[in-house]
Length: 348
Ligand SMILES: *Cc1c(COP(=O)(O)O)cnc(C)c1O
Image: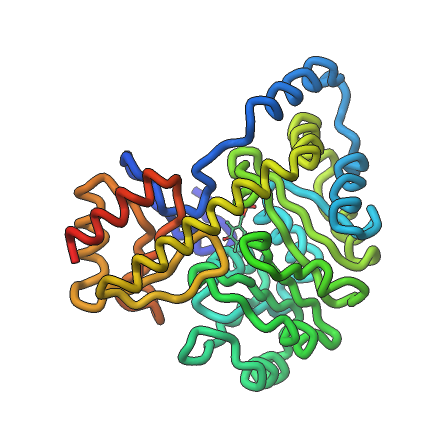
C-alpha cells in the first residue's frame, strides 16, 4: 500500500488523552457553555438561514463584527475553523519546503505539528531558565537560521507566562511574527492593539477558551490587509460554514456574558495560586486559565496518577523536555477547583 508522503511523521500528532473522569481539568476549556439565551437566538437564525446555499465566502458579517470589537478594519480579519486552522493557513501561505518556522520551547505543540504537515522546516529554540524568551539569544537564533515565520505564544501554553511583546517587533524585520493570543482577556494585555499598524505582526485569537466554545471551532487572526488577503486566497472556498458564522456573530452581542465568565475564572485562578502558596509545589504565576506546577516532594507522574485515582484529570507534562515533573491544571468551576485542591492537600 502507498505510504504517506515522507516527512509527515504520521502516528504522532496532537495528543491529550481524554479519559472518563468526573473532573476534567486537562485541556484549558471553559467549564461553562454559552448561555441558553444566546443559543436560542442561534436556533432562530438557523431556521431562517438558507442552508441550500453556499455560505458567504468571506464571512463578511462576522468580519465586520470582529473588526468593530477590536477597532480595526474588516479587511484586517481572517476567520477559520479554530485557530489551528488559522495557523495552518498562515503556514500554507508563508511556510512550505523553502521556508523556516520557529518557536521557543516549551510552547504550544501545534506550531511544530502544523509546520511538519505543511512541509515547513521547524526550529525549536530554547528559553531562559525562567522559561521566558531571551531577546538577544532569540534575535541571533532567528538571524543565524534565517527564520521566515516565528510563533510567540503569549501568555504561553503551558507556562501561563506573558512575553514582553517588544520582542515581536525586534524579531520581525522581513519575517512574519505570529502572536498567538489564545488566552488574551485572561490578563490585561491586548496584542491586537499592540500590533496595529505593524505589517509583520499577525495576532491569532480563538473562540475555544474565553468564548467557551471549543466545540464550535472558530478562530481568527488580525493583521495587515495585504497579509490577510493572501490568507483568504489560500484557504478553501466556503471553508467557514453558515451556522458557525451565525453563532460567532451573535456571541459579540453577549460580550458582558463572556467578560463575567472570564472574570470569574481569573479570580478562581488566583484562588488556586494562593492555595499553591500553602503547599509544597513550585508554580509559575499564570496570566491564563491554567497553571503549570511541579510538586516539590513527589514524582510528577505519580501525582498525576494519584489525582486520576480520585477521578481528577490534569495535563501530564512530567516527561516533556524542559518540564521535568510538571503538571498543568486548567481552572474549572468553583466545585471542580475545590475538589482539585482538596485532593492536592490530601496527597501532599
Ligand atoms: C487552545 C489553544 C489554541 C486553540 O486552538 P483552536 O484550534 O482555536 O481550538 C490555540 N493556541 C494555543 C496556544 C492554545 O493553547
